[in-house]
Length: 160
Length: 339
Image (cartoon, rainbow over all chains, first blue to last red; front, side, top):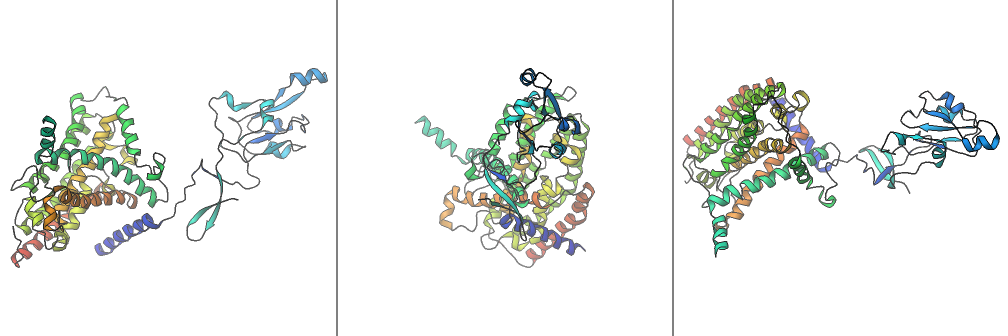
């Protein structure tokens, strides 16, 4: 019994030593290496100002009340009626994708960017003009792709 | 002339050994490096990188220096209900006592701060004083986690202290002396670990137990009782109490290397005249032991308190008695060392 236990201790130490000297590393060095995301990734939402038909469907479907319609003053005066455009609050958005699905003209699209940080709570709220500006990536690292490897588990390969 | 005097005074053994090498300054550097190494080894075993960004080519080696600066400039908070005197003084005593055994550790046959017939006993006795202050610390903190942690420390002390003494003294029986210089000199031909492997393994495990290294990290037990006796400490006081166990492990490793790993052997006689070379050999041996203790953190989970106590009483104590009999058999069987 105690011999068996001692052997198991030795085995544990040998396994640890094996990983210490030859083990792989699964860390992705995040700001320097950025994972290449698949198509259909639900990142932050891009808004096309020109193709939007102001139908308000996105604001109606939004389950988290993240998208709201804002009255556009300039356009309202020009067209002599109330014109509304969508704006988004990223503090509320749950990235469910309902707005993208329901948009009849595909004016709302997913980007592949998810790692944006804001300093204040107010910066989370994007009115239509800011929403239409689009999103710039914060970091410009090497793009890598995750690959399942028999021996190592996860492996990252650079995307060319 | 005065500068020369000061330099020659610095290299006097009774100043150089406790203060510079292998004493306070070296212990401090070991402390900084071993904490970094512990995180790095654990990270490598767990397929991560560990601290990396401060000096990237060297793997973030001065991360601990950055941590130390943070500890130094952190506001020291003294809770209202603690016993202030005991709360403030125990970290200092703990660290001081952890590093005090260095006064009897020789780094070459002729270079030591203090030589005594009983230097092995002095070193071991000084290491046993530190747990008292851990218990005082738990009482003074006026916190349930501190109290539970220090009581656990008390339980562990009584279960490792007897076997660690017995296995160290079995080597004293074998060499026929308690003087660390003579013990190291007696291992010219064959090292103690080969003569009495039972005592060697036993003392190695108990050494990690006495400094609460990982399988026995019971008093601190972060996931159970926050940080054990150290819960209420912050800033540089926490740095001191956390460093104390590492320094104690470093000092016990020095004693262990002299007892079992031959001290400064196998150096040729001509190189022994330079205490720095022989000291470096001793230092490298003990540093490997400390690093192995850091590596164990990546391998083991934590034992329960009852499992650790049963290891102390049911396994370590019989093994230490066996090691004493082994030494007696070897001595009676005619193994003699030139002393």
